[in-house]
Image (cartoon, rainbow, N blue to C red; front, side, top):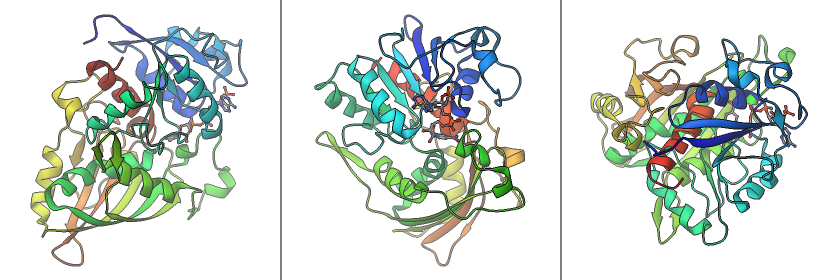
Length: 351
Ligand SMILES: NC(=O)c1ccc[n+]([C@@H]2O[C@H](COP(=O)([O-])OP(=O)(O)OC[C@H]3O[C@@H](n4cnc5c(N)ncnc54)[C@H](OP(=O)(O)O)[C@@H]3O)[C@@H](O)[C@H]2O)c1
């Protein structure tokens, strides 16, 4: 636990991810929210300017805060969580890092930059060492975590990769409407429909997965060598991305052993007992018709922070396995994972 509370700000606090940041920061034992920024609502009170969609009510005290401009001179914080669109993030995140802030970003702007760690805390916490490379050039740092689809995929792949070595991954996703932010996809395009394309998503899944699974060596990440192919679709589900995954491995796979490996998987956040770490990052369900978004997206000891997996079965031969994975795109895929990452940064004394 840090010796004092850590001051945090949320950039883009009015958007969907921003709202989940506020929901999950409310009552946080280590972090104290000191600023919320907006593009179009500067000067307005949070509760008056937000269309709150994160369930329940706007946390009372946060609702009274006034939106300020995303300007490093106006923000009083140690850490800024960025829930900005990519283009705005490219400029603003760098400005904040150069001004000495630690930026924990949910945007895609710097995820693939070679000096920027792209981290799922249970998978590759050692990649945070790239912060030291950034700090030779500026006083702050940018730290990122993956796109929601990639995080939900990467968690169950990690124990399989460690045990059997993954050669190939083929994934088809059924992604929730809220993954596109607010207002997102027009309702007339999505109701009674499936949109079989999400711009830029398939490239993100491949590149981000290869970087996360890569090895840190000599101050840079050597991307993993596995083949990755994905088809990303948007479906009329509110929250929760479901992913149908096919994996080919170097060594022979035993499905029962895979179930055990997934159930027992734990990482540094669990060892360190970080406040937002779920006891089980992966929950395996035995029902033949699970996981389902409506039933399972808020599973786990920290609701929404676990990925649920089901229908683990053999693929085309003994070196392949198939399963379905589901995760809450705004919790494990967005605000929750960024908060967990900031907790790891605090526990490892980066902040
Ligand atoms: N939705 C998800 O499931 C999800 C998951 C993982 C990652 N992400 C990523 O997280 C980020 C936010 O996504 P979202 O779904 O929350 O989007 P969103 O609902 O559209 O919200 C975007 C926010 O960014 C602010 N903004 C827009 N243009 C800006 C500018 N030029 N300068 C400063 N602020 C600006 C908006 O501020 P005002 O409204 O106050 O003007 C709004 O609060 C994106 O990079 C997205 O790719 C989203």
